[in-house]
Image: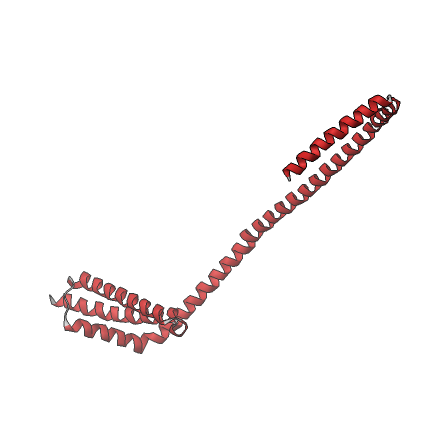
Amino acid sequence: MTLSTQFLTMLSMIGMGCCFGAALDTYNHFLQRPKRRGLIVFFNDILFWTVQGLIIFYILFLVNKGELRFYIFLALLCGFAAYQSFFKQLYLHVLRIVISTIVVIYRFIVKIFLNLVYKPIYSLIMAVISLIIILGKGLYTLVRFIIRTLLYIIRIALKPIKWLFLLLWNNLPKGIKNFVEKLYNKVAGFFLKIKKIIK
């Protein structure tokens, strides 16, 4: 490697050490280890360290074609130590501000969505459902009233026919009456037998 490549490698690894420190603090901030189960923490840790290793090796590959030297690890350690000493408190403060800002913006967007989209649509749907129920009840009441009215009219219309039939029945000769009564009793008895057989 040329001297300029070595210098760029050193600077890159110091920068990656700082980035690794920031990434580690961000990861710990979001993970909240005491609240997580051990298995979840274990898998997250493996994933985090794998991703960090791949990112560092990718940067190293871009700078010096992936050649490993002892000073590279020292540069990473120096960058991490520099972050811990000079930038950690500032970064954590900025991270908290950024997270708080994102949370406030998210809550504001959710509130706007609820008030301008969800609640009006929900109210409209409920109003339509209420209207359909009211119309259904009204239609049911109307149909019921019409049926009752028709039945009442039919009953009134059939009364003269009933009276006429009774008048005719009363004026029929006794022989015909007896014959009709016997026929009626036979038919009724036949249907009664069928009913007993079915049961």
